[in-house]
Amino acid sequence: MKKLAKIAAFAMAALMAVSAAGCSSTRTVADIQKDGKLIMATNAEFEPFEYKDGGEIVGIDIDLSQKIADAIGVELEVSDLAFDSLISALQSGKADIVAAGMTADAERRESVDFSEPYFNASQAIIVSVDSDITGPEDLADKTVGVQLGTTGDQYCTNEDGESEYTVGGVTRYSKGMEAVSDLMTGRIDAVVIDNFPAQKFVENNPDAIKVLDTALTEEEYAIAVPKGSTDLLEQVNAVIQELKDSGELDQIISQYISAE
Ligand code: GLN
Image 1 (cartoon, rainbow, N blue to C red):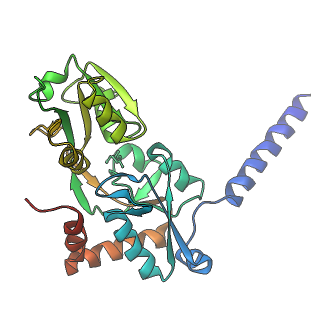
Image 2: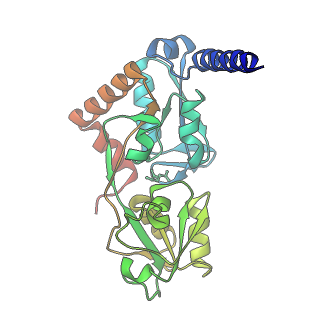
């Protein structure tokens, strides 16, 4: 019986090893070329980086990913997913890259590889125009809305106890817009979200909401690839470097963000 259990355990381990190798999610650049398309996963609820304009998904990350597809010589396919399922889309081989205003942080680095950063961002606080909240210290007894699985969620939830400011309670939404709607109807007291989407929300509702001056974090956006996708990562980094050197990255960004 003991022996049987051992054999079963061995067979199980062998099976797991084979299936892990069999569904290896890492496509090389050559695989992508053979397939003819680069699959980019994102969450198109994050203007100006990715959002829907009419029926089309547009934004900085789409233009950037198009440049990567062009460099590889393939079509770009954009897959619009929930933000908190983007990393698993890479791990399961459903996507080759994630470009989603995604902050390259230590926790995610355990599951995916990140390109060189292409954008500096921060977490901003949005409140209603007549709010008595003037800075992050006023959030201690307030309910804050965040987008599920984002760095804003991590900061406010403060599981590791490292956040400089604490909040009274956290409500999680699948879309930033839903958090902003609840803020405008008074269901929550503030929204913590990345600074440029925050600015866009305020531009669209200037009489109702405003962004506070103090930012909560400093972050860098990077493109994620499945762990170990060495040649794809090199290709992505080469494109980012080229776009930085030529000034094209700034040009792309300035199409969506007006310099003030
Ligand atoms: N930068 C944030 C993060 O990486 C939010 C990104 C997003 O909502 N698209 O978690």
